Length: 281
Ligand SMILES: [Zn+2]
Image 1: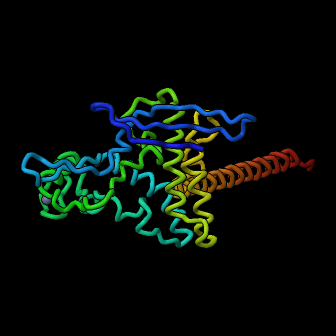
Image 2: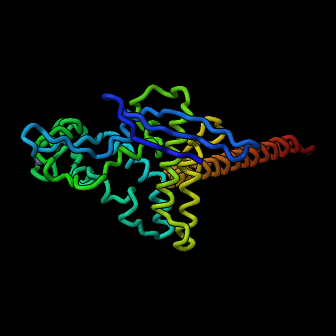
């Protein structure tokens, strides 16, 4: 059980006080931790007012939002579609709750070196330049009225596994893991409420196994343990191609072997006939 107080502001630093209770021990032990919250995960889509007090700047990482979406698309949506389940707007994983979704859908990848803006049809050499163009020219199209920064969910969704922003495997931080688990379980409860029928129950369970179990420093659980539907179909395709190849090779070997046997036996007959030929006259 975790109690959270805060945020507590110390100068420019932003802290949150956490008290942890471990109900399994005989005597409830409590530990107090000051969790430093400087991470992007808590940088909800904040807006910065400039000196004029009007123009807004979005503080939500586009790249991490894209990573989060990639994970949702690959490791969650196939299961949601399989259950024919409708995510509610209240669920932060709903496509409408990603401020960049509309822009991402307006990217046209023409060629390796050509990316086109779907709004004004201007072409760019790489996705990076198109991203900059979106920021410079089409930021007015971003719906930033609510907390819709998908990058904020990166902690729960293990974005680091699909990006190379951080060097692999920093030392596990128990309080960060606990925080991410809490965020993760919150998403499961909000997106797949357990009282909303068997589909929601199954997806709730899947979400916990797929994303939340791995938020621990004790190890043993890997993220995305239920796999990805896309990969499984590719896996089955590869397996079936390999099997058909093996079967074909087997039949060719059998055919060649039997042909060889037939030739040998014909040759043997001819030799034996020749051996019998000289008759006494
Ligand atoms: Zn454009």
